[in-house]
View 1 (cartoon, rainbow, N blue to C red):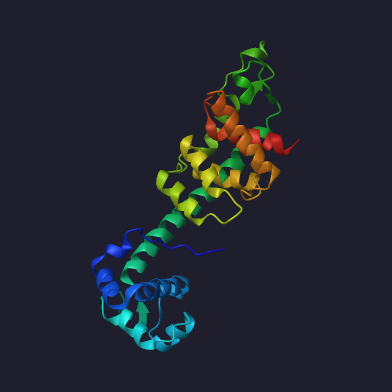
View 2: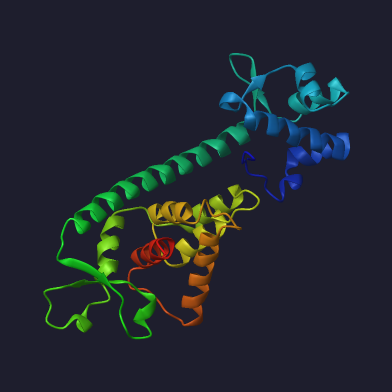
Length: 259
C-alpha cells in the first residue's frame, strides 16, 4: 500500500523551487521530492540530518547535491534534536492525520449506533421486512407493522427510518473527505467510487465504511462490488431518489449478500 502525502501540481512555480531548478535542474527537483518521500515514511516525518545517509537511501551519488537541497533554499529545517524535517510537509501531514482521525472516529461511532439500532429493531417481533409492490418503491426496502390493517400502506420511511436513525448526528461524507479517500485508493479497489456515491447521496461516513465492507473492501473484481455498481446505475437510470439513502443502500446490499 502506498503512503499518501500531497503533491501540488504547481509546486514547480514556488519561488524556492524555481531557484532550486535554476541551479540544479530537474535532477535537483527530483532529489527534493525523494527527500520528502523519505520524510513521509519516517517516524514523526523527521530524519537524521545526514546527507550521506540520505544520498544512499535515494541512490544519489552526489552527496553535495543532497546538502545543497536541504540547506540552501529554505525548504527544510533541523530541529533541536538534529533531525531534518520539512515545515511544509509537517503541516500538510498534521492536517491529513487530523482529518483521517475524525473520519475513523465518525465511522467507529456510526458502526456502534448502527449495531445498537439493528439489535433493537430485530428484538421486536412485530416488525417485519416486506418488499413493496409498486415500481418506484421496488428499489427501496420498507419496514411494515404486521398489526396494520392494510400492509400496502406501508410508509417509504420504514426501513429508511430504521437505519437512518443509525446515522443521526453522524458525520456526513464531505467533498473534501471524498477526494481524500480517492487519493488513497489502491489499484484494483474503488474506495473513491463508493465515497463519491456517499457524497452524492449525502450519506454518512459510517455508511461508507460499511459499504466498503459489504463490497469486499471495494474490490473491483468482487461480485458484491459489481452488485453495488449495478444498484447505483439502476437508481440513476430510473431517476429514483431514496428518502433515506443510508438505509436504502445498506439494506439493498445486505439483502443481495444474503442471496
